Length: 96
Image (cartoon, rainbow, N blue to C red):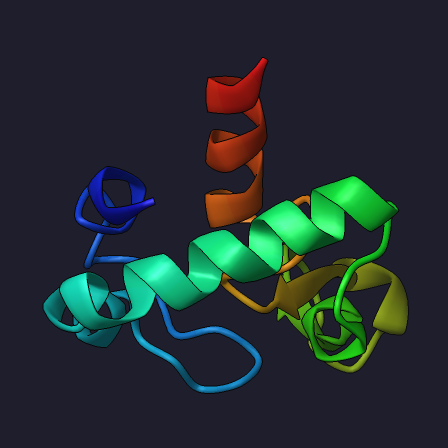
């Protein structure tokens, strides 16, 4: 888990919980073991911590008038730890 955390891109924006990748990288050594436990427990039981399922949906203007709602995409900002998130996908691919 530590090597996954230390490879996070620091240029990415913060997640829905307002955790910035830069902070996660700085504390990677301290949180790697507890995260490994949580991920293993999650995989073993087929469950994801409910807080990791939350997302913040924001409109992103694509083109045209900003007054027309059809000129927006929706983007979903999720937890960095979320199921199907940046860390989760890397952890799963390493297990497989």
